[in-house]
Length: 181
Length: 178
Ligand SMILES: [Zn+2]
Image 1 (cartoon, rainbow over the protein chains, first blue to last red):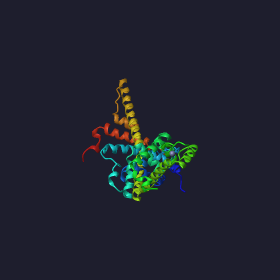
Image 2 (image 1 turned 180 degrees about the vertical axis):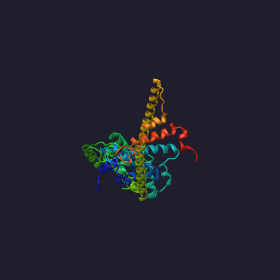
Image 3 (image 1 turned 90 degrees about the vertical axis):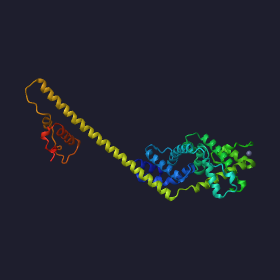
Image 4 (image 1 turned 120 degrees about the vertical axis):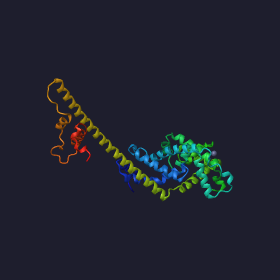
């Protein structure tokens, strides 16, 4: 087992680039998954990860270790992605996602996967983020509350609402359709 | 619990994010209510589907490499430019202090000449550049070989300024064309 995130953070705060490099290597796979499920494309996700790490490096002296590095890093990414997402939405108001599956008839596994990701991406910001953090990353309600700066009760209600919306969008995933049991 | 819990409670129960007493109640209810059992099954199915899809969103080795190397390079550049800014600020401060010191000398020099004039003594006043030259020592500080500290640099700057501005042009052979 290597050095803890906190040890690496402290070393990075003292200017140890190799320590920060280790943190980047350690957290990129998870961070990229979050980024890609929040934003539209792999290049965007890559940019978002880079920006997040650079912002983290700039602020690493302020990271006091009260939360985990993972939570802190994710909070930076979420803030940046909502900004980028809002901008992209403004730029392409006429493009809608996730409502077209009804016309396609039978869906292949690949199509279903695409539709699920699209359906998540089409959720309003606050619902999209709770779903990604909970369902993809396994964050606790408390961690999500910290990342999103809202009370735990809000996380609970948003997650519930998000699930209801997704279920409405993804009738194909109902267990009695035999897609997943 | 005889009444069906709300779907929000079921959602939190599904996540294991509910207090122990309520969780016991829900568990007891779900065991006898097909409708709530169905709700929970749908939530489980959705969670499983999303978890499966999350695996397909993995970073590719080339993407990981690009992210790491871009971050590494940007951090190196940022630190280098921060250190350059610190050095520039130091040199700037040093240059400013040299100018202030040189100016102060000259002002002081003018004042001395004016005082002499006000006494009205019929003494010949040496030209500025000669009097300035007599106050300067271009040697480094004694005992410090190769000294290039602000202490000796300020002399170099003052001498340069004096030669340019106060030496009569006929005595500046280095400015005459060959
Ligand atoms: Zn029930």
